[in-house]
Length: 71
Image (cartoon, rainbow, N blue to C red; front, side, top):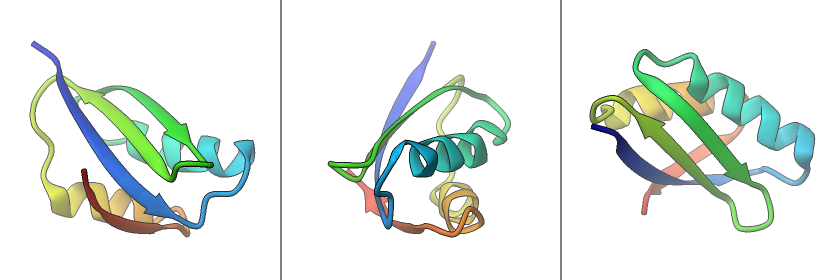
């Protein structure tokens, strides 16, 4: 079973930003795929199980970007 979570992240403006946010989220246990889209500010995270919002926030904020919320 795969769980898809869509986040809104502010501050991304380019491919480098997308890769940085993706790397931070990919480090979370259970994450299988991350697709970040700077123009929309959306990040789609696929995981083996539901992820805690606190863990998502910490992973994004730790990359220097701002976790806005889940969509």
